[in-house]
Image 1 (cartoon, protein in one colour):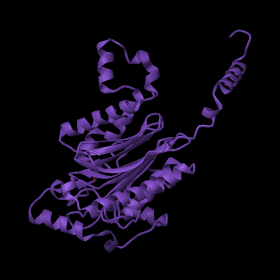
Image 2 (cartoon, helix red, strand yellow; image 1 turned 180 degrees about the vertical axis):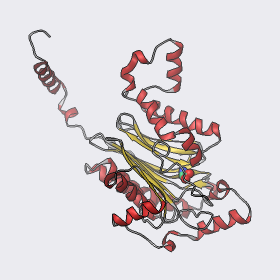
Image 3 (tube, protein in one colour; image 1 turned 60 degrees about the horizontal axis):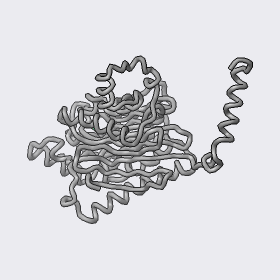
Image 4 (cartoon, helix red, strand yellow; image 1 turned 30 degrees about the vertical axis):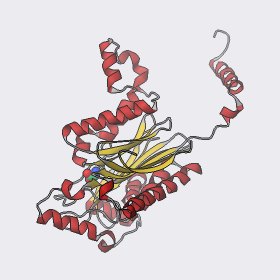
Length: 363
Ligand code: GLY
């Protein structure tokens, strides 16, 4: 390009692109997508009454509608994630906020986290009591403190400074969760036996500005003791968002999701741009990853590649003995689920007109 300066070449290139792209494409709708979950586990049609089935679907649809509205109106992925999670924290159907499971001592200790994929800023809280919306507190940790994670009394003192809403213990506690704890103690059952499903809630979003966010909120597992914390508030395990790759929120047996580092593992694999089978093929062909360093930054993934990557990582959870599921969105706008249980309360909506909620694995 001798004779032209770089800015002039760039300006000419931009003009060419502007004239070459058909008007319809230039006016294309901004793309957004959202996926939500309300827990995964042993969820079977035969164990649900029609009323319960309908109640879960209505609650999921309400959360999906609230977050889709934010995105449709040009709002941020962070706002959409909060808009989806807050109603589920208020709904006793889910194990988050009101209706959360009880600890061994009969208390309710809540965990939550949120991450902004555009900056990789994050906030999390663990083992907090009395906070109506732990997801809002997690976001305040991100925006109004110099820290990423606060726990217990300290997190509650911070919530008070921030003027966040508190509720009395009886607002959170439900008869169903009290019965589960009593049954667990009387029959010497494990949390997995009595919980049947992990009712953690979460949301992931891509907004029309190309930014992604993820958030997760939970009461953890019935009968938890000794300050047990699961994956939900752990950035990289239960929650992760990176504009270069994806946004993920998990639900399941937290100990396994922590050990696999599920949410970040999925995003890292997508950022590297290769599924496990592609990596193996590249190794067999003698293709050096380092020589392909551009792929270490980011790579577009198809729906199938994103699905395969999420399934691969969930396969690792299963191999270790854990179960649960994840939701994710990608920069290309794909919204998808992967779970190794018989059901997952879930929903997704996109600017392309997808709008659906589902419960069982076969739908
Ligand atoms: N996945 C929620 C927990 O294990 O606490």
